[in-house]
Length: 212
Image (cartoon, rainbow, N blue to C red):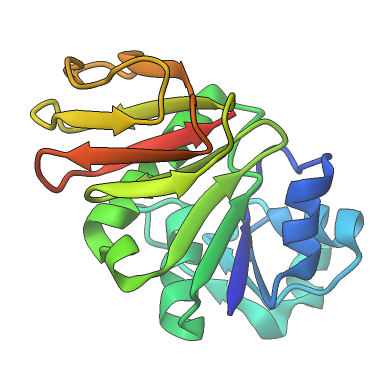
């Protein structure tokens, strides 16, 4: 089952992310994001979740039967939607769209949540594919050594919040084994030299990968 979570950032304009949105089995909207989803895609959401601080009264009334009010101020609406999707639907794939744009701080925070989800839920070990897709990039997290297909020549950036991890890469133009991940720029702006990239981690650690 595929779940797409719609955040209240920049709604995608390009074909691929819009296809993910329109073809999802389940769509969970974060608060006010339901308005963009209905306007742009013309489908009904499966659920609307959040602290409901921004949804219009009209939408709140229209979707009252599928609204989940979560007032927890220790998490953002994306995390509320993510936890709900995992517990309610048991998906094998989760696409997150609309998580970037409008505000850089929201974009950085949402991207970092991919690593947090991998750390908390061990998603890759459970064969649950999670990515964050925009008009510009596709981002996902791994928690241990992994390989992925991306196509030779594609931009690849690697980030981690664990400065002790060593990552040996195969299939990238520039080596990563000397990189100390103590700042976000350290292994960014690399490029795939092969269709398939393999990353060997010295120990399990949350690692964020962004494909251009």
